[in-house]
Image (cartoon, rainbow, N blue to C red):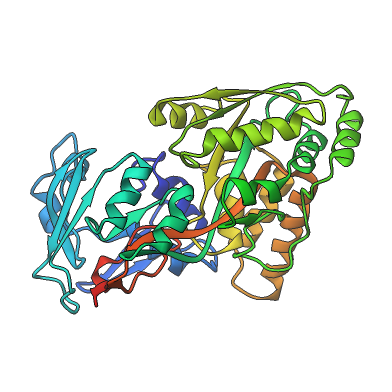
Length: 402
């Protein structure tokens, strides 16, 4: 996993767990492996339980290794060699994935012997398939169909706590957006409550804290709706007449409602003198590539830290060397605080440093969070046992049909 520095494992997960890059693990005996940490870590056990850090069957992988591909990475792209309840049966990229029961699984046999995962890009079509009873579960149900799903005879919306936030992300290297007061002004100019009621139909809540409220209680408030304060901050930042800004969006992330969300933000910012040009990016792949390269001045996005820990979240999107820092935010003092947090075990001392980092973000607001969205999944009425995971995905082996 360390052989590819751009991977999530090498770029985010293992560093936040303080795993030693020089000697990540040591074999103790045939059944024991030791992970070597350079410092204490409050998140190491949680991180090492992340699905993409799962142990691979070395006997099977070695059969497909080559001189140019010693870790069988190419083979593993379309094949499985793990120890879970299911194994890969077939894969049609972009269309369908089939899993079947792994007869060698060490645990209880699951209720479902085969799982069929179909790609249905159109959100309304997904909702209709669920309502009609043609499928048992859908991911990312469309916001405008949630009430219809809940009122149907065959399905309901599972609504569980999550750290998912939808944001107006900005490039802090931009001459205007690089100024903290400008970012604060934008945040105060946006009427989040109106967004919650119109776009999310009450299935979300305003994001008014530096980190997701599910991760940390009693945070200081940010971005309360105050257009007059926004105008004052713009003037103090040297933009008394506002400025022009382009906001890019794609319907894959944060969702098919992205354009309508953009138009509400456009209207709010116009009232304080910021002229917003909305730019639709049709291709999700092109959009993600440009986000990673920090090519956009601003863009609508979603962020969901995979570990339920504020230290991990602080590192994930804002630490200067994180693989997922896509805003370009780089502050040595903030980095120092995050590094300290990641080296401390749980307890009052760690909490104190986390609070210092949170206070730091109140004055900087490098990411303008809009709303907090719970884990929303459409589930058939007769399927029980779904539990939301911070890492995303579904524990299919825990599902049962009533």
